[in-house]
Image (cartoon, rainbow, N blue to C red; front, side, top):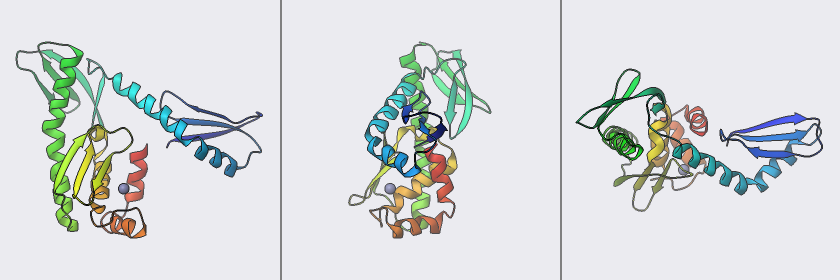
Length: 215
Ligand SMILES: [Zn+2]
């Protein structure tokens, strides 16, 4: 969670989640840090609810229209709409061009999702298989779906890995971390020390990457 604590000359602690998905806490000067941490824990469910609402609003507000930014693997591209018989998306140096005949939000979204399916899915599947080979644990199946609170999950019994469809927006170093993290759950179905040492063996800078993921 992205939490910002500001000390102010006030009497009570004020907790809010803004439209950017930041958790803002204003606290009186003398309130101990532990007290604020305890409050955050107590209010965690409420905070998570608010964050998921912000996320939903953000996703719903994507219009895939001219001038809007399309984010792919952490890089921003300006969306350009071009009238065309053949409906297809194209990524260039700094543009994401949508060639479209029936220019409606629904159709744009369909074309963008198709592009992600044709470009991002093969990319992350390759990455997962290559990483799996390197560490000696391959998944039996790789799935994708929209998930609200997680970037990936691993069913260790079935060796099935699921990635969040929204992962295409994250930078490559972050995607690599999510891939290794989920694969590492095949031998280590927990987050104990042995799991993290295994991750660290193959990705010494996993902590920085995880930080980027949470941003
Ligand atoms: Zn995990």
